[in-house]
Length: 161
Ligand code: FES
Ligand code: FES
Image (cartoon, rainbow, N blue to C red):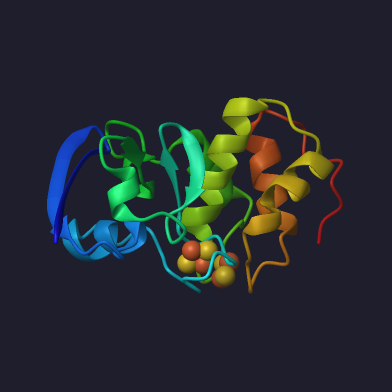
C-alpha cells in the first residue's frame, strides 16, 4: 500500500491505496465522493472527468498515486458557495441538458474546463471538445445549448431538437 495525499475540493485528503488504485476509485471508494461517475473504466465515456491542477482529466485514466500532491476538483465543488447551482449547472437544468444524469458530472466538468480556456466557444468547438464525453440519452443537442447559454450566448438561433 502507498500513502497518497492531495487537495480535493480545497481540503486535504489522504489515504492508503494500492499502486493500481485509480483516482476514480480513490475519490469514490475512499473519499466517498460518488458524484464522479464510472461508466466504462477504460477512458471512453467521460463520466469520470474531474479537474487535476485545473485541467480536465478522466479520473479512470490516472492512478491515485499520480494525483498525489496535486489539486483535484470534483463535481461536488462545482455549485456556488451557498449550495445553489452554478451558472453552468443551472444552464444544464434550464435547457434540459440531462435526462438520466449519469453523464452529467463529467459533462459539467468538461464544459467548465472548456469555458475556462475558451469563454466564448462556437457550437462546433463545444461539440469537438465534448468528443470524449458520451451521453446515451440526450442526443447532445441540449447539452451543447446549455453550454452556449452558460457562455452568455443567444441560443434562440439553435434549432429546437
Ligand atoms: S469511467 Fe472514465 S472514461 Fe468512462
Ligand atoms: S443524460 Fe443519460 S447518459 Fe447523458
